[in-house]
Image (cartoon, rainbow, N blue to C red):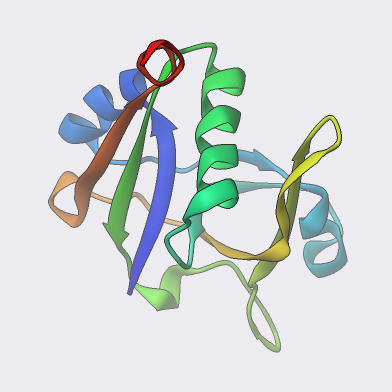
Length: 136
């Protein structure tokens, strides 16, 4: 399967060598499925975003990683290693906002991948620099 992953440019430089390793994910959306809001895995969006959902994802990365440069990656992953419950894959509907600006309205779907994704399964789609966007 092919999915999408936003991260910082600094992380991308490491990912090119090491791949993406599972990390702690804290999302309230997990609670109804696994009884906790925390797990370890890789957050993968099921579809590529455009317009506001895309811009919001870039700003989120920049704000949370304290960096002005972010990237969008495509990743190839094995569906069998997605976080599951007895009834099947967990597909999370996500809502995201900054103040009153809702950039993810619950229609955006993500999965959590439980294994490392190796560099050969990852491609850079685009690089973004918030300072370039603001000054151009």
